Length: 136
Image (tube, rainbow, N blue to C red; front, side, top):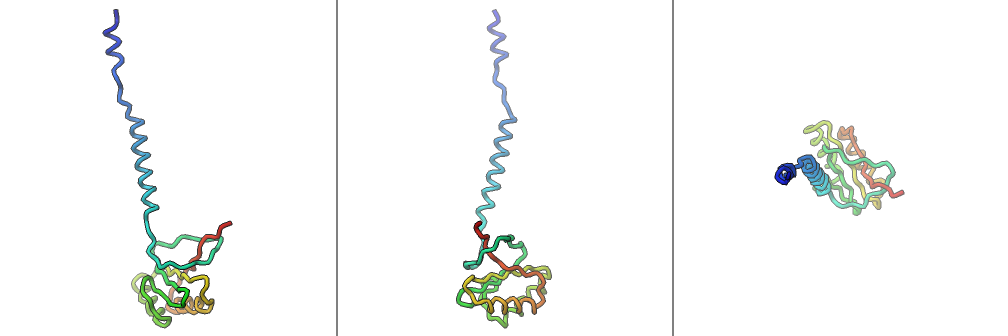
């Protein structure tokens, strides 16, 4: 009888390849889920929509024009004449700074152009206008 030899041959084997697949899947899942947990710390504004929208650059300064006409340089409220000085200080600290102009869609177009003009007069060459992606 060969009963004893069958027991020796049927010992369980530890399969490591499926376990590596599961660990890799969990790693990718947690990496992707943390990307969606990042909050953008900006002032809420109703942006106009555009078909071709790009994401903000990592080294950017937000200049926001609120619906009531106030101008915000990042999180600080400033006046229009002071905007050029703040832009020139930011340019002196880091010359390749991208300035993102975010204006409420209800704001007067003249105020947007005045702010854009002040940013350009301060010497900024990289200026982006923020908008939201238009639903097709």
